[in-house]
Image 1 (cartoon, rainbow, N blue to C red):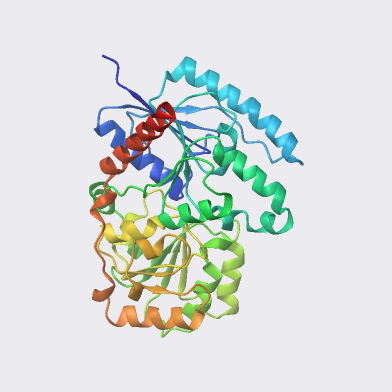
Image 2 (cartoon, rainbow, N blue to C red):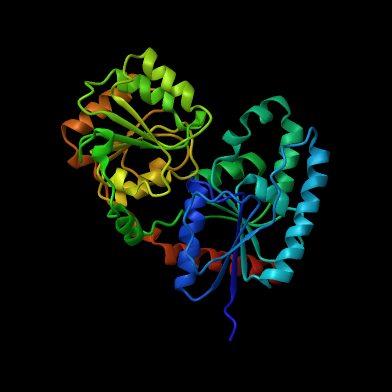
Length: 372
């Protein structure tokens, strides 16, 4: 008997939160006896994928076109290619999870059934500039993209943001990102010598994020420069702003205390051995690194950014976005006594439970359509 099919679509297996969600969820669906397929638009593979998962690439990595009309025409062709490929190489999925905006837009033109858009961030923040300069056009576009299929948001704040922005144009729900505690703990135990960076176990602060403006590296370094600097700061990740942040460390005269260690597909040994994890995002859909630190028993503090951290952490672990002095004080406080900043993981985030929530949501939306 053939197993039912799950298809997860995303741009590429890069090392960010959406991609970690996809790889974790893929493994969970294997566990509950599904045939699991991951389809990408690009062949980049920074993330590990279970060998039992079927991996596909329907290539489309072209730069954005000048106008929305031109881009829509290109994306319609990509959607048709994806449809043809899925029907001929994958089969008929019981559930298709379309991750991130680019894929959401492309799959708005798909004729495949059982598609759910997964929103990993707050749409109003993602489109803040376009909403300010072209509000009517942008709103119409977003209603088209997110009205095409039911939408699941990775935090309730992100869902409320979507509803406030474009209204109830389709069925929506909140399904948090899964956290595979046992796998994270297993990966954290893989051989890794932190000493090669001149660091000691539990002897550093860690920040894990791509070097992007929304991740708040600039504010983090400004705050760190105001702390007692008892421990060095380790920055894990890569991205277009890395050189700029390195220059800022020099300008703040803290370059000898800030370690740029690059991107790791498995950052968990680094996280597990940190004295404190700090997240300084200006906005998030969820805040994956928070729950990963919780899974490893590592103290966490975070900016109280829209829209995920306040759903994952108590108020004492949070500081307002942009409060440089407050962040510096909170870092000092957490390092003086880390124990109060260790918070338990919500057991509802276990992968098989999250996997079932997506299946239940798809069944509910189909029932609503049939009843209407």
